[in-house]
Structures are given as structure tokens and as C-alpha cells.
Amino acid sequence: MALTPDMPYEEFLDRVHSKFNKTIGEMSMKFIDEDGMKVSLRDDSDYDLAIETARDSAKGKPDGKLVVWVE
View (cartoon, rainbow, N blue to C red):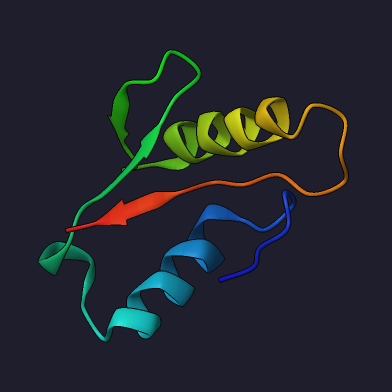
């Protein structure tokens, strides 16, 4: 699923939930931070960290990559 860095967290949530046809309480999300640790993705601040991590991993390229695990 493609997203832009300026996509609000609520829109991201809506897209993920509709993709998997689940409600918010039925799944959890995690991503790998800059230290290589899996971090829960539960709110705006976690989402901002995930976007920043994707920007850092792009190393100046126009497209970054963010892998999100949905459980």
C-alpha cells in the first residue's frame, strides 16, 4: 500500500482497516524503528516516528520504505 509522508494517521488507519476488513480493536500494528526494534504503532506519535524512520532509511532517495506488521 502506497502512502505519502503527509497522510494523516487517521487516514492511514482507515486504509489499513479497510484493506484487512477488520476493526481497530481486532488488530495491532508494529514497525521496525531506527534501532532495529519492533515498535507498536498505536497513535499519532508512533506514526510520526514510523514516517521519520522511513525517511531516514531512504537516504536521500525520493521513496522510502516502511514495513508494518499487522497482527
